[in-house]
Length: 269
Image 1 (cartoon, rainbow, N blue to C red):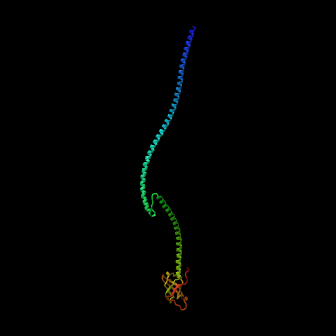
Image 2: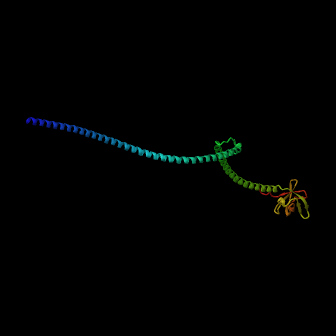
Image 3: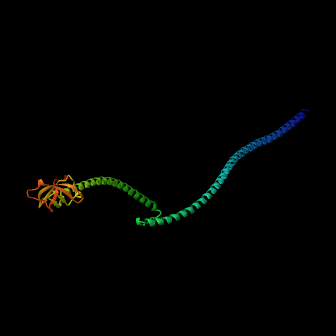
């Protein structure tokens, strides 16, 4: 009996061992699958993390690309606008160039006229030298204007001085004329043209035109010698009737035509 029990026990033990071995193999297989699964899961998670990181990078790149695209779109729009503006500017520049060409032609024509006008001043004016020439003319004009103003001041002073001198000259001339008249009167020499011994008067060939007045005292000369005195009584422009101062006659002297008459007292100068 015991051998059978031992056999059964051995068989049971072998069966248990086999089952245990089988289970152990299965456990190992399951554990291996579990470990592999865990590893796979970790790898999958790692790959997922990597993929997520890549996705995030891609999203960042995509956002940057979109932003860049927007900037490029704006740049293209700005360039288009700039191109349009440049086209308008170019059209305006072309118009300005056309206008400048016309102005240049007018300037060339004006320059030819200026060269003709300035021929006596040296000529040779070009568009490059025209401003310098104009400045030179302007400076010369200013210098001449300054000189003219100085001359006007001098002329004004000279005119005042001339007026003063003229007034003084007129005064001196008038004084000289009056003096000459007085001197002329002092040197006046008239001739007795007629004598009336009975009535005691004579006629002198000079009158008021020669400066005779009723108060003028006259002397009668003959051969440079005083022989008597007469007093004007009737004066006409060209002759004078004078009374003979008989008391002034020298003894035995009788006045006669041809005797000379002079002033008894010279007029003061």
